[in-house]
Image (cartoon, rainbow, N blue to C red; front, side):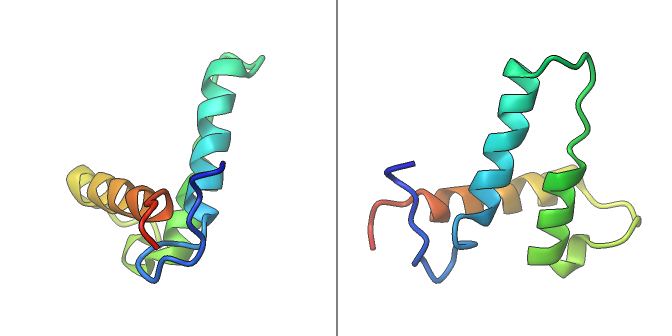
Length: 78
């Protein structure tokens, strides 16, 4: 949390990191046997309209977007 860079112009202001953090917590610490990433999906759809809706997207595109934005949100260089 100390490395969160909310001022990066290429990042998401920390929103994507917080959603991803919650998903990982639900996967590893949750008491449910199944976990739905719907909240993360909604956040990605709001931040990147090209992924909104129910049309099929290439997994590589979504993962590239996710990793790039997580990197920017956690980049220590201001």
